[in-house]
Image (tube, rainbow, N blue to C red; front, side, top):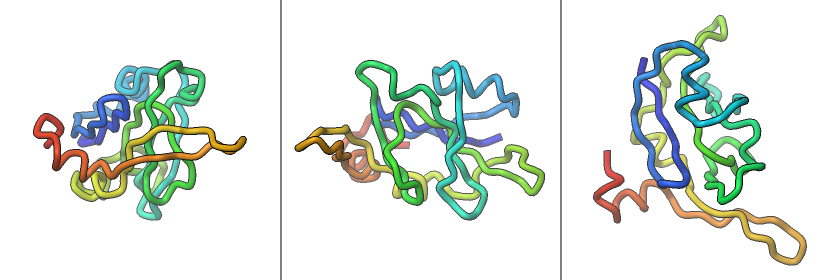
Length: 130
């Protein structure tokens, strides 16, 4: 099935083939434990590294509909009525418009996210285009 892989280190989003086996998620997002974050009412969600904040030199992104920055890679899939994984409802271009790639910065004891639109980054970098 179709899925989207968000890679904040490379600042890239790619369409990938997901075989439906949850063990494949570990390999796709390079982690030992994952969690699911819901960012859409349509059932689309992102599987993320549950220990991503503990990785040195980590990349971060934000996705519209989820209030916090996400650490590390993510795999976007849809969810059916029984909770099983299906291809996302959102299109590739819709995902690009929802993602910001960035960094966490500390200012006066507060941690803030500073980022740029994935769509704008892709428009300025031919190697990142679909």
